[in-house]
Image 1 (spheres, one colour):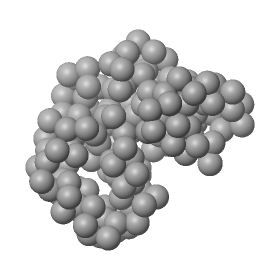
Image 2: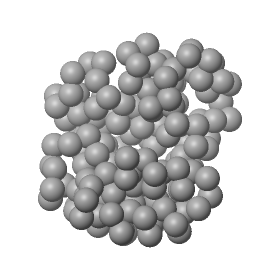
Image 3: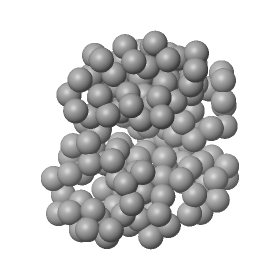
Image 4: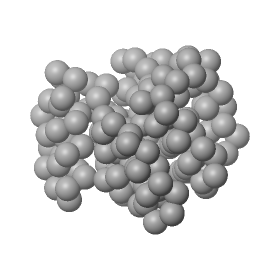
Length: 162
């Protein structure tokens, strides 16, 4: 709940409040808070700060969706395609098909500019009920996706808002 409250603040334009919220609650939910802060910094293209948040998350839970997925997203946004694809392969090993953990790989495809693959994976996630529709709908990271006609079709699938 702590990360999601921070996300609600972040996604409604109250980014500084979100960052303060995550910092305040870091000791209670560190992985979620580091994930939220990493998204905050990634949206601002502050890769140095995002790297620090990813490293903190990796130190606590190195094989978590938050740590591995955010590492891949950071690598993709930095332009390290091969390393980002290697992270997708790792996510596929760690998480079974149809699990929420696999959604993180879709985000990496998006950051790599592979929009066809991203939407293919997102439609599969909607079928598996693992689509994080709120993230897609409101995160600044997915602004370009929201302008794609497939986005409306994706949201019309009746995806549950997680």
